[in-house]
Length: 293
Image (cartoon, rainbow, N blue to C red; front, side, top):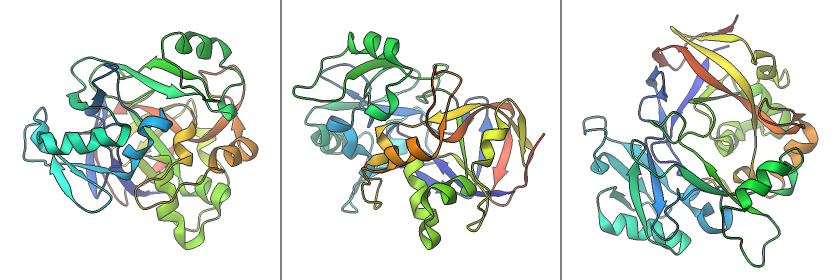
């Protein structure tokens, strides 16, 4: 096993950038999910989990200028589907991003509030989350008409990032091959799942091998990560991601092929990939060996 892809997502719910190497620290990859768009109408994070409003954000990509100050929005470059790009401190860039959801937005660093995102509870993810749905739905305005309840849930990890449940998301090509059987399209299809680290080569197909890593430490080059839970999927996997077309069957297929109970759920959920905390930080690079203890 070795690292075959490294992805960083500087702005939550936007596409990210492929890297050849990156430092893993206590909060995950340097620069990952350090910014989010905030909906000026609701004061909440504008995220693609609220797919009917903000799903189009996934068609845009964000990258970071490593030479710029990390808390400077000018360090962020947004590239739109038509290839045009703009800096994060440019009002025209923010206006165009806001037009995706029909609401004005601002770019906020993860060191500031708010830390609440809106989300939709897709049918495939509702079993076992009845109390969470009732609680979050009471905090959010519902879409009318809308089949999926809308919730408002905390986000922001430990306060320094906008990740959801853990600083690292790890996915094997074996899992993607077992679910998707994409052949030559593997490297495109796996972007639907928004991993930080991808492990394995194109032909690996031993099933959902990372399930066995939950509760264990995995060495990634000189770094070590503590795998905490399977990743329960949401409606985001069905949406358009950059050049990858929407596939409304994806979440349903995961629910049928690989129902697993994450540690935060009371019943099996559609899962692929794992979340991990950082046990020992280090620089990681493509080709670094990976071994579970």
